[in-house]
Image: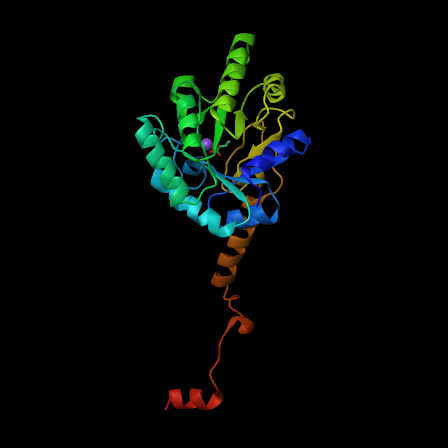
Length: 275
Ligand code: KIV
Ligand code: NA
C-alpha cells in the first residue's frame, strides 16, 4: 500500500495520482483491482448510495460503517474518509474524537475536511495527533447552503487569491494533499505550482497533480445525470437494466431456471417420496 509520503514523491516525479470514491466491499475491490492510487470514502455516499438530496444528513457512524466495508475490499489501497457535516466544527475535542473513531473503528488511512478558516486549526490538531488529513477547497458541498448552490468557485482574481492563501494554510497546517473542486483550471494550476503537497482536482482541469471522480459517475451506475466535469467510461445502468429485465422475462416465461441450474434426487428416492 502507498503511504502518505509517497503521494508527495509522485508529485515531484510528475506522476499523476488517481483517486476514486468507493463506498462498499465490491466497489472498493474493483477500485483496487483497477490500480487506483487512493480511494475516497466520500460523504457523497449520502447522495450516491443512500439517496439523500445532499451530503448534509451523513453521520460519523455512516462514514465508519462504509469505511469498514471499503477496507475489507481494498486492503492494499490508501483510504481517505470524509469527516461528515458538522463533525469537525463544534469543538476541537469533538473533532479529535470523531476523527479518532473514523481512524480506529473505520481503519481509514486519512481523513478529509472541507474549507479553511476555523478548519485550518483542526487540520493542525489532527495532524499533531497522528491523523493524516486531506484538505478540500473550492466548491465544498457541505457548505452548499452558504455558497448558494453548486457553483464554480474562484472565478475572479480576488477569490482565486483567497483560494491560494487558504491552500497554503492547509499545507502549513500539515495537510498531506488538497482536493480542489470546481475551480477554473488556471486557479488549480496556480495552487498546484505553489504547493509541495499534491493537489487532486475534480472539475479543476488537467493541471492538478491528480484527479478524483465519483465511482458511480465513472460507470454511469444509479445516476440520472452527471456534471460537466465528469467523463463516463462505462454504462452500468444499461448493463444492469438489460440483465434485470431479461431475468424477469425468463422467470415469467418459465425459461429460468434450466436443468443446469437445478438439483435432483436419485430415482429411487423420488419413488419413495410418492410412496
Ligand atoms: O464526497 C466526495 O465524493 C468528495 C469528492 C467529490 C472529492 O468529496
Ligand atoms: Na465529500
